[in-house]
Length: 264
Image 1 (cartoon, one colour):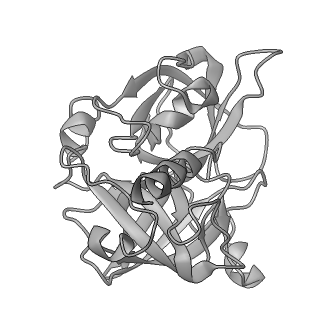
Image 2: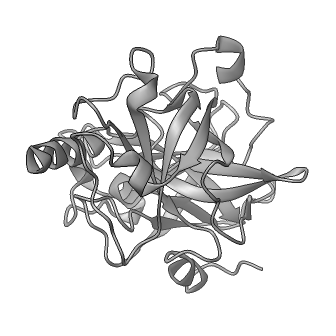
């Protein structure tokens, strides 16, 4: 039973081309570009026979966007990498602006089954001077922390969801078990009001510290820990689980980030 549950759990987590953000309260969903202009759209397309993809990312330095590694691969499969010229970043504000990508850097140790190390960096052709990059958290968010997840659902407006950080032990209480990934830094969350769904892979989870929102994680996927099927935020929010990779300064991803990005 456990092995069947695990297979279904992990298989669904990777089916979302990019998981957007859904909130059951419309007024909470349409938050507008001015709220988090560092949260951007990530798009890729390799031509006529490629459906392309649309994900979310976060500007963390004038020439650098962080996103999910599976957003940089065709059909989200390792070994089917998009070229940098196939990818483009678009700012949060609706319009025709586009920021070309000149290089894609992928974190080592990515596991498309567990979603561990599902992190990539996009190097932009020119520095962005119109948007202030997001600040990055210094440490992990402890269990019980309230957080905000952001993304796009094929729409020009950002969407938001409210989540709560939980532990792997708390997640693994049903028939669908998620494996531990000792060589990564994973975060699991449950829904408070909405959460991640199709369209927001690679998007940020922010934790508020004082009057500042700090980037904590990058969205990898989601699952229903009870049904082992596609999660239903509206129908079964109590069993929805969000799966994220930490990118804070105490995470496994931090060394990868600082090897490329000049962050202070």
